[in-house]
Image 1 (cartoon, rainbow, N blue to C red):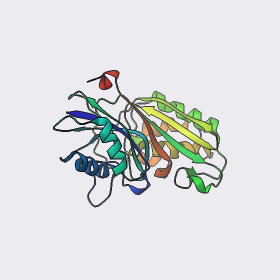
Image 2: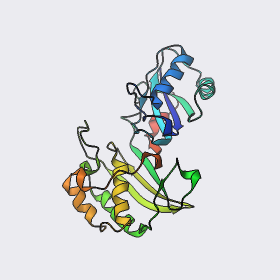
Image 3: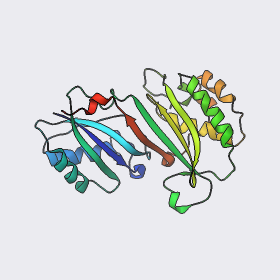
Length: 249
């Protein structure tokens, strides 16, 4: 039987989502909890992977279990079993063909920036003291929508087969006491969003002109783009699936 699990986590204590040797990850903690409660070895397949220190407001994974599970009871017991920085919102039975990673059609990230020193955001957002030209940053972000190859924003020596991504939206907005960058695409490369944000910040700080991002994209050279911003300001906020995934089973 296959189940989809929807959950969220605060990533400070974890070395990302995916299992790693000699490092604690969200996947490891969730798999151990599910294996203990279901009394069989459970392996999770996530919708994607987040890097060390990155947070997720909405994340999905699927797992297989030998017998039908009481999803409502498992949800309650799992949240009682897990640490405070991981929370499960839903567990739903799906068809055996449903796949948390390959069936996801869109993913959305946010990056949070604060421009006034605030101790309550120290683990939640990136502090940028200098003034930013948000209009110029939004002008630059539009170039992302017209491009498909994002090798210039990919982590070096990555094992991906393609650098093609379909970016559906990318924009900055002032939201209460923080500046938020939102970007949606069918897929993302490792470190891509943090590298995009770092490059757009260079525009906002006047280090480069908005149109220069076009040349950076065409270069396919990570060295031409800006530095990656800290992980603590990055949030996976939404993973979208076709409606059939959650049809009643």
